[in-house]
Image (cartoon, rainbow, N blue to C red):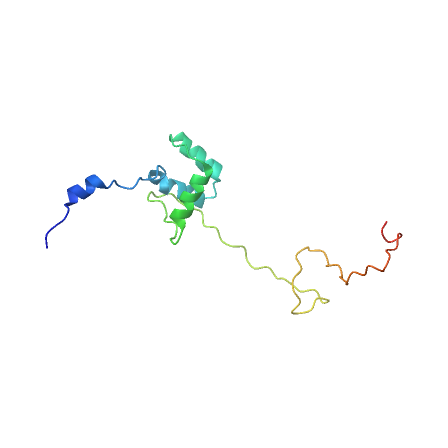
Length: 128
């Protein structure tokens, strides 16, 4: 089988996809985010290194790099503090609450609804 195009000709016709200017700082960005730094602080770090991007660009970069992969620890030997979850608290259910009752989260009790009656006149005293 004969070649129709050589690799050199292909490379001349097709350019390499543009590399993000955030890629050289990928490990640093992920390390900062992993240690709780805000997006504004990460943008400030990037600006100190001569890289200016929008916050949405940073968010997309972080989302793309952390999707379907675990965040890799930095290659340098920086000690990380281990965050342990707090011990489970003893949550007691009040005696007047049913065992399988849904948990209310600060919502008001729904008002009862009834079918509207055009013939019924509202009481002016209850409307005050």
